[in-house]
Picture 1 (tube, rainbow, N blue to C red):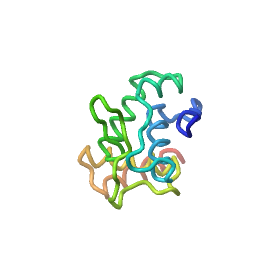
Picture 2: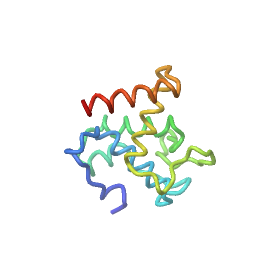
Picture 3: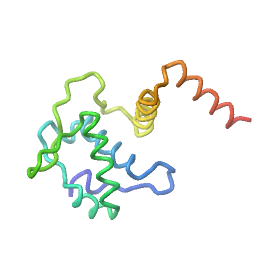
Length: 130
């Protein structure tokens, strides 16, 4: 059983399942467990192994492909992409750091700049304290 297939989801974490799957795959790629060119399980196979919806795994794979972690070749499968950029996950990235990266990307795609993102995070932290 591979490191991905033995992965256990944490339903009490509050983190959506698709993000847990995505973060796990990104971590395994960043840590060197999976190397460029390695074949990943099919969406269906991983969904069965993790006992989750096909759509959940598909969403994680689509996001990973959009971010350059993996490539899909019609009729051949899904493979780890070559990652030479500075933004590649590091082995030391925790699931929380990967979640923060996702949040920053989502905010940037929504048109927020760095100052806006920081202001929103500070406002949310203040809201939690109060």
